[in-house]
Image 1 (cartoon, helix red, strand yellow):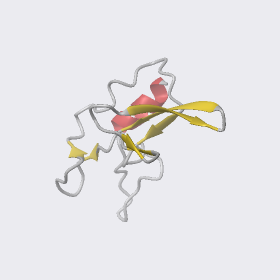
Image 2 (image 1 turned 30 degrees about the horizontal axis):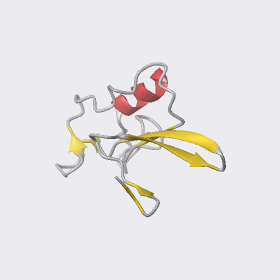
Image 3 (image 1 turned 45 degrees about the vertical axis):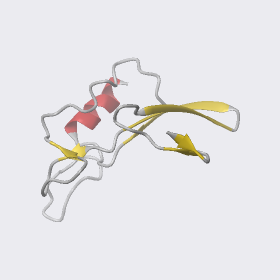
Image 4 (image 1 turned 30 degrees about the vertical axis):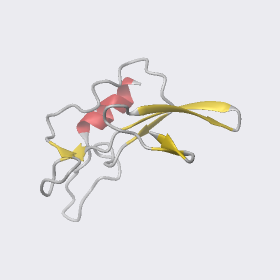
Length: 94
């Protein structure tokens, strides 16, 4: 959905191409994060691969998520890594 230069990415349509200073930028974004403390609107079970559509060779310039990839700035106060393994796998694929 685009209105007034605002682009809202939906799970049903998670990608957009924007022109920034005459350069085309491809963005893929999802609001999902792995279930950790308790359920909320955008949390999904850790075994659900919400990033499966991002395949090897995808030409995205930016992947956007509500949760960091596993082991990248994802430690909580107890030192546990709470980031998303599926997001990390998608980053590694592309």
